[in-house]
Image (cartoon, rainbow, N blue to C red; front, side, top):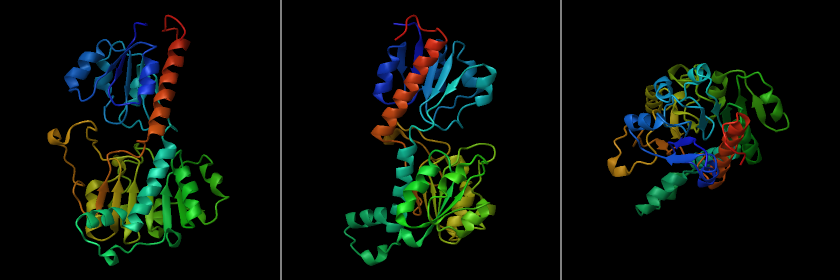
Amino acid sequence: MNNLNILVLESIHPSGIKLLEKVGKVNVKFNLSKEEIYNFLKTTHIVICKSVINVDKEFILNAPKLLLVGRAGTGIDNFDVDFLKFKKIPLLTVPTGNSISAAEFTIMCILNSIKNTTKAINRVQKRDFRRDLLQGRELSQMTVGVVGLGNVGKLVVERLHPFGCKILAFDNKKNGNQNNFNKFKNTFHVESLEKLFRDSDIVTLHVTANNQSIGMVNKDLLSKAKKGLILINTARGRLLNNEDILEAIEKGIIKEAFIDTLYPEPSYSELPESCAYKHPFLNHSKITIFPHMAASTEDAQKRISLDLAQQIKLFLEKKNYLETSI
């Protein structure tokens, strides 16, 4: 056994834990207070977390022995990347580990929104079988706007294609992403978010949260949207201006929203009876909220956990931190 202490602060698949136990001593600790986390950090060499724990400057300064940080997933908006670079502490991620799961979840949200499935289930449980109140739409007759053509967005476009809908795609990165979709019929690339929101019946977001994208869906953009828009966000909660979203719903600009990630994020392991989390979207009749579960499939979580553990193992071997090769 090596003398490396690994602190896992958010849930990852057991397969990765098993591999990490060959690298060092693994401490799996959830729902710790800040003081408790900082106490563990004093002797921790490797930290693994996901989207809830904020690995900020204060966190990093309280980890004097920190060699490496692992993000079990892709989004890094809760990490102080600049300070990690300054301290020369690598940040490992798994950018494609959950892409398929997130894309499939997005398609589910789209179909749920236009087929009124959740509403139907809730009504039937109350012995309300009035199906005329649940009339939906055919996706083939609608236009879907996809914002972001990265690892998830491009898979969403591919999975939308067989439905026969018109697809509008926007990506502000000039990296050739758009060229991948010339083969798809009824797929068009637009030059601005404003045009995409103006011409789409459904808009789904697939961009990272950064200085350019935080709060991007705001009053100004929504004022240009087609009335009755269905908004789907399986990316990051910080992309939305919450007050402007609520106002757009009141005005009928947004018909319904499906949100997978709130900001700030709640604890995903806390029992309901002890959860004091509050958010303006909670209990809103036209907002369906999920507990950041787009990537929560057995397949994706196992893939992410093993990939990250392998990356950590290879990093430590390369840097000769391990006593023996494993």
